Image 1 (tube, rainbow, N blue to C red):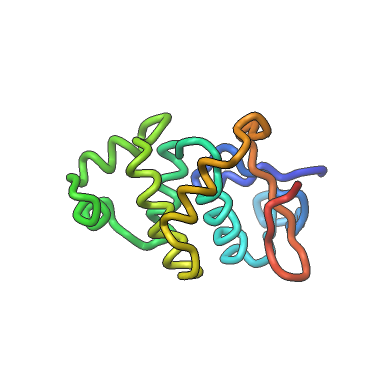
Image 2 (spheres, rainbow, N blue to C red):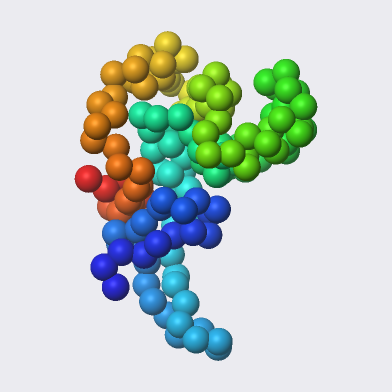
Length: 147
């Protein structure tokens, strides 16, 4: 198996280059993944650096990784839980909401990047090189975005 389409996190665009193993389970073949927590952190960081607007799936992934309910995130953003639910079902989240959750995630995971640095990074990314697919590989230092 070359790459594994990792959909267990609720995202359709994540592929694993390595760090997984096909195993026999009582009901057939299964996949064992090394360091799922590290993988999810690598996905979260990649989403904060993604050059385009977040999709609803990606927004939901970040919210869940932050362990925030739709209601709590709505309170933080001055929105209702229904608004958050609607964004999570959409193809594209409003840019301001995407920037805010990216910033909250970055501050929560590493606490070093400022909001201005995040906005500048997103402005300067070359949109032409992004094809929508996120591939990850396991390294000695943990999971990293491939490529």
